[in-house]
Amino acid sequence: MDLGLRGKKGIVCAASKGLGRGCAEALAAAGVDLVICARGAEALEMTAAELRNAGVTVTPVVADITTEAGRTPVLAAAGPQVDILVTNAGGPPPGLWSDWSRDDFIRALDANMLTPIALMQAVLPGMMARGWGRVVNITSQSVKAPIPQLGLSNAARTGLTGFVAGTARQVAGKGVTINNLLPGIHDTDRALALDGGVVKARGITMDQARAERAASIPAGRYGTAAEFGAACAFLCSAHAGFIVGQNILADGGATNATL
Ligand code: NAP
Image (cartoon, rainbow, N blue to C red; front, side, top):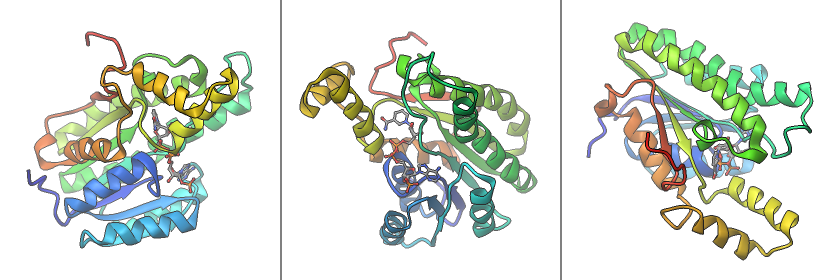
C-alpha cells in the first residue's frame, strides 16, 4: 500500500533503537525525510546511515529529548515544516508504589507527559496552518491496564493520554490527527531490562523469564519493532486522516478487555 507520505518531513524521537527505530524505518521506507534523536551518538549515527538506504534525508541529533536543551536542537534541525511527529523517550524505572518521591514523579512526568506535550505545542501550529499533520505518541499498554511495578509509567502516560484526548479534537478540523500507539511487550532493550529485573527478583534464567512472558501473551510471542513501526506509519499515512484521538494497542492481545 502506498502510504502517500513521499516527500513529507518528520521527527522521530528516541529512535536509535527499539520502537522509535522501528517507526523511523517504516517512515523512511515510505519516503519521509527524518530528524531522529537519541542521547548516544554511536548507535544514532549507525541508525541514520541505515535509514538513508531508503533514499531519504536523515538528520541525526544527539539530544536528551526530555530536556528543553535537547528539544531545541531537534526542532531546529527539523526547520519550520514538520508534517509528522512521533514522540518517544525511555520509560520510567520499575519499583513499588510506596518507593517514589516527588522528584521521581517529576522526572517521569517530564519524560513521558510534558516532553510530548511540549513537542506537540511546538509543531501543531505549523501543521494546522498547512492543513495537514500527523502525531503519534508512543505510550504503553499501561494506559489501558496498569502494570503494578510501573506506577510511574501508569501515572505519567495516563496524563498524556488525557491531554491528547482533548487536544486531538481541537486540531482535527485542520487536517491534523493525534493518536497514541500503546506497545505491549516488544523484543527491545527495554524488554530485556525488564526481564532482567524478573531474573534477579525470582532467581530464574533469562530464557525462563522470556518464555513465561511470551506465554502470558495470547499471540504467544513478543512483538517486533518492525511491526510496531508499520502500525505507526499507517497512523501517519494519508489513509488514516479519520482516526482521531485513539489509543491503539499493539500488544498481541495481552490486555484482556472487550473494548
Ligand atoms: P529501548 O529499546 O530501550 O530504546 C530506547 C530508545 O530511546 C534508544 O534509541 C535510546 O537511545 C532512546 N532514548 C531513551 N531515552 C532517551 C532520551 N531521554 N532522549 C532521547 N532518546 C532517548 O526502548 P523501547 O522498547 O523502544 O521503548 C520505547 C518506549 O516504549 C519506552 O518509553 C518504553 O517504556 C515504552 N514501552 C516499551 C515496551 C516494550 O516492550 N519494549 C512496552 C511498553 C512500553 P539512548 O539511550 O542513546 O538515548
